[in-house]
Structure formats: C-alpha cells, structure tokens
Length: 72
Image 1 (tube, rainbow, N blue to C red):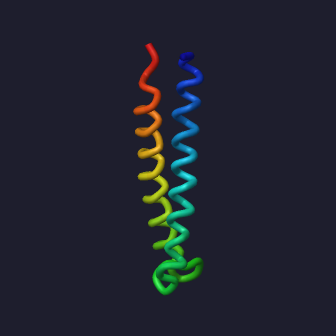
Image 2: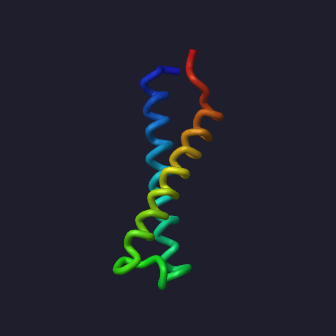
C-alpha cells in the first residue's frame, strides 16, 4: 500500500468521525433543549459537539489503523 493512500485514509477517517461527532453533539438539543440550544446554551452545545467530534475522530482513526496498519 502506498503511504499517500494510507495518509488519505487516516484523514478521511478523522473527518468522518469528526462529522459524526458534531451531529451527535447537536442531537443533544433534542435531548435537553433547556440546557443545549442555539441561543443561551450555545456554549454548552458547542462544547459537547466539539468534545464528541474529537472523541469520534480519534475513534475513527483507531478503527482505520486496526484495519490498515502502518504500511511497510
């Protein structure tokens, strides 16, 4: 496997995981609209979205590395 393809796979896994995390973070609005919303609770909404995106991105990269370890 070419190293460039492997690095692109890592980036794709991070972007995909991060996007999923953002969507999950904004789902909190539906779960607790009094605490997470786009007005007074925007800081909480962005914080949970960012944390979820970071965790999901790391998880996506870890799963990619399990499937495609570092090329020789």
